[in-house]
Figure 1 (cartoon, rainbow, N blue to C red):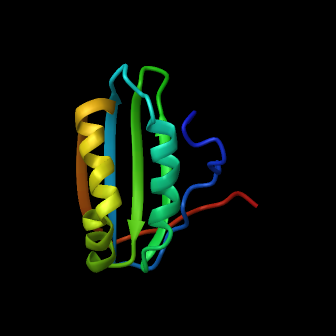
Figure 2 (figure 1 turned 135 degrees about the vertical axis):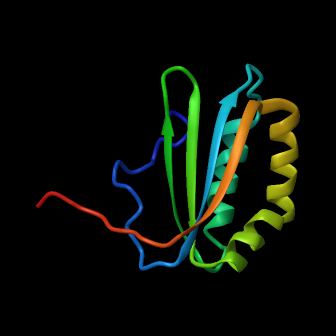
Length: 117
């Protein structure tokens, strides 16, 4: 999780469904110039989207990265997807930063959590 130094080791809480998740799974290319700065900007920008609930990140030593964004409704997810600055970062990711990626969007119908006391 080197690109998320302040990331908490606590997962995003289990919200009352329904809500939406966007699961972004990546394999990064060697060229990473400007990635960390853009990533930090995206993490700040998404927080201004009404309905944004949080984000989880994980990175394997082999280079597979997973980011899960949580959104209260489809409209908030659409607002994030169509944000002009986010769209520009997506294009740069395709041309420079990612070897490959997948995006899965799902409506959460059941959610629960556990924290050891």
